[in-house]
Image 1 (tube, rainbow, N blue to C red):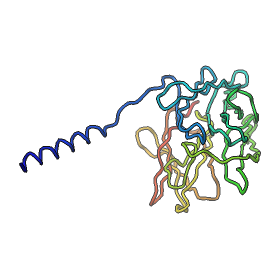
Image 2 (image 1 turned 180 degrees about the vertical axis):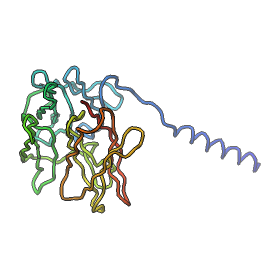
Image 3 (image 1 turned 30 degrees about the vertical axis):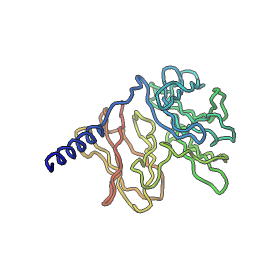
Image 4 (image 1 turned 60 degrees about the vertical axis):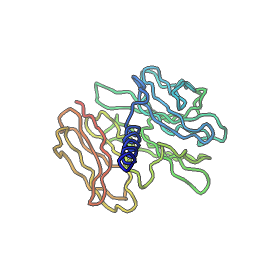
Length: 266
């Protein structure tokens, strides 16, 4: 009887263990995908389709829910989609999102960016030429949207900061970067980089000082920079680096972020 009971226990254990494996649920081919928790509609997948200048949203069973056609300037390409929400940028329950597009000047080797906010019908609510990086901070009432605009056509390049008051708060989803999260980077830009790259970052509150480290793909440390809470980004020169892929992350004695890829082109 004891052997039978032991056998049943082991079978139950292995059955439970076998059900807890990593399984492929779905593949979105040719696009980058992410996940968001919308206050009204709930959890949705969304993808950035660069070829068709679209953001498509899918239900949890991966059936198509909405398609948003995005207006980008002539000869620009989608670079990033952020802040997919329902009532962050206004007070209705329709979908709004922020997206960034870019064009590359191959003759002079610099990028020009454009940031826009659109609703689910594709109507542009805000257009910021030159906008390359955005961040939303909670405010006493609503939130503050910061958009940094860059002009890489001049040397040294110029930067301006535009601040907008918006009525809502960020959705609790992958767009958030809580202090205990390892996702402490926004997108580096430009990426690919030629002469220099700006890497935005956020240090956890309990980490006073750390290093941003840049590695070659073979693991060799290429560059290291001290960072703290004084700034929220760092400008990294790349002109002397060989073309190729690199990895960067933040490290301290008590903290290590996830690793992210940076491409250097010539």
